Structure formats: structure tokens, C-alpha cells
Length: 452
Image (tube, rainbow, N blue to C red; front, side):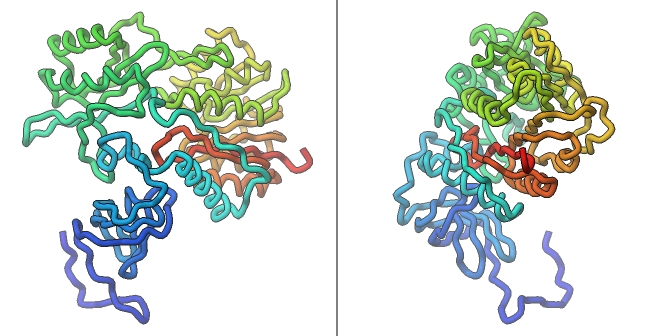
């Protein structure tokens, strides 16, 4: 809806209001540099343009997706002068699907972009830099993703079921017949899934579908209404054909269609198997996850018998390898179901030196019984919001060493500044290439108390 004029006009001092830019307008641009999210940055008409699919040094023709007073969101429509760092995307859906926005960039350049993003955030928000930069942890560029959520939506106008991934900067669904970042065991299931879902009697009742590959392949179907017996039969026949577990979720928790079904993921370096359910948080990149755990344990340098605190512990991804090293592990998570499954994972792996507790980690730790007695080291792996309340009380725990695993450089930088105020020093930091072909930055940082 247009806003009715008040009769008053405002403009920046000494200048005139920039002309309106309609959605769809094409503009020739020279890309000056790369934004942290992977988009190219250009300056034209008094505005800053953020252009998806463009690389620094290129000249492109871009189409406007949306404009504000000082910034424009745009998408590359045509490459006029290409960067030497440009490569042909492996996926035919690149530029439409919102999943992988850096396939046109060389992998080494992707790593450099992520490293630069982390460094800039630490410097700009925290005013700090590490004593040492670690070599990036990376693995295969493609075929790495063992977990995926597939969007499903019933289009009442066309009376068709849309199945695929969300489009770039849109809620539209892009139909995709192959996804090169998925692990190989999920490929045939993924390719056959749309045809199956379109056969169901009540496609309107479908929410979304999650695929997972671990000790077995699993498919979780979320639904908003009861499934008919005919639909159940179709789903069971499909899962039998592709040797995949069927999990269903209406109201409440996800349940396996076969009550005897067991699902887990392995950590071979520590001879561990962790039971999980579809929908649980499990790192999507198996090889980088293994490298990440190994690096975290190396940086912590825990000795047998030392007391270690693992915050945001999930299913025990770090806690159980720490326990394998004979540390006394106190592991804390905010979701009760995850706490129970993590404790069961410790028992099933014969570990009696890992103890699990539930707590609201958006609040200070002071007063928690499990926090008494102090710790030699702390490991944090928080969500994107970071762990500000937790780190505000970190000095009271007595830990000399702290490893912070982050999925958001912005909140890592904020929390790092708080740790430094408490007497910690940022000794080492580096990126974890958990999501190749995307601009998503995971990072690890080692902090030590002064004099440690």
C-alpha cells in the first residue's frame, strides 16, 4: 500500500533525494568488492548495490530485487566482464535455489572470503585479532551434506504440490531434481521424493520433509492432518524400496513408523556412536565435524581427570570425545529431550565420566549446582545468538582455557570482546568450512586467561 504524503519533504543536506528504482530495472555495474554474505558490492547513483552472483572486479548487468533509500538488492543477469576467479557452477539450479550462493567462486576464494569476514568482524566489533590464525578446516566441496530439509507447499490455484528448496531471497520453491552437495546415499531418495509426494491423497496436509544419512538413511515427514491408510501404504512402500526409515511428525515429537528403528551417527576417531532422531541438531558435514572435534580437543589440551564444562552440548558431539580422553565432563543443554538422549549416548558408549544437565543458557550460570567447584577448561558451541550471558560469568568459573565454536562471526566478536574484558586473551582463531559453496562462516577461537 502506498503511503499518503504528509505534504512535508525531507532530503539529505546539500543533496537531492535519489530517484526511485522499480523492481526489475536493469543496471550496468562495476563490482568493487565482496560482501561478507558473498554478494558483490557496487556503487551507483548514490546508492550501495548488493549483487548476488557477482564477483569483485566484474562488470555485470543486474536486475533490481528491492531498493531502499541508500541500498539496492540486485541479482546478476549477465556477465559483461568476468573475473579470473569465476568458474562454472556445478549445479544447474545455481542462481535460483537459495542454498548455495558461491558456486561461481573458486573454493580457495570462498575460504579467503570466510577468513576475511571473520577477521573483519573481530576487528570491527571487538577491536581484536588473534595472536595466531589457524589453517582453515575444510573437506570435500560437494557431496558433503548428510542432512537436508525439503520445502513442500500445496498451490491451491494450480492444484499442484511444489517440492524443492527455497529460492534466493524469496519464499518461492525451486523444483530440483539433483543436489550436488547432498551425500550420495540421499541422492536416489531425493530424486524420487517429489513423485511420491504428489501421489498422496492429501498433499495439503504436508509440512516439510527432512532427509538424514547416518547409521541408516531416514526420512521425516511433518504433517498437519492425519494421514490416510492409503498414504501410509505409499510411504511405507517407498521407504522399503529405497531402504530408508520412515519417521512421522504430526503433533508432538517425531516417531519412527517402525518402533524398532534405530538411527545414529558415528565419530570413528573416538569409537563413538550417538543415537539421534530426524530433526535433532547434527552437524551436516561429517568429515569437517570430525576435524572440528579433533581441533577443539587439541586446543583445549585437557589432561585426564581435569574437570571440563561443555555448554550447548546437544547430543554429546564434543562431550563424549572429551570423556573418551578421561576428562570429567559437565555438559549442559537447554532442550530436555536432547539432555536425555545425550545421557543415554554416554551410557550406551560406556562412559561414566560425562554428566548432563538442562539449563536456560540465555541466563547467567551463577547459582547452578553443576557450576560449583570450577573448571580447568570450557567449551561453548552456541546457536547464532551467541552466549553473551554465559560469557559474562566466565571468569567466575576459574577456567584457564576456553574454546568457542561459532556459527556467527558477529556474535563471536561481541562475546570475544566480553571475554577479553574479563582477562582472557584471544590466542588462536580460524574458520571451519562446514558449508562449502555458501558464504556461511563457522569459526573456532581459543581464549586463555592472562598468565595461564
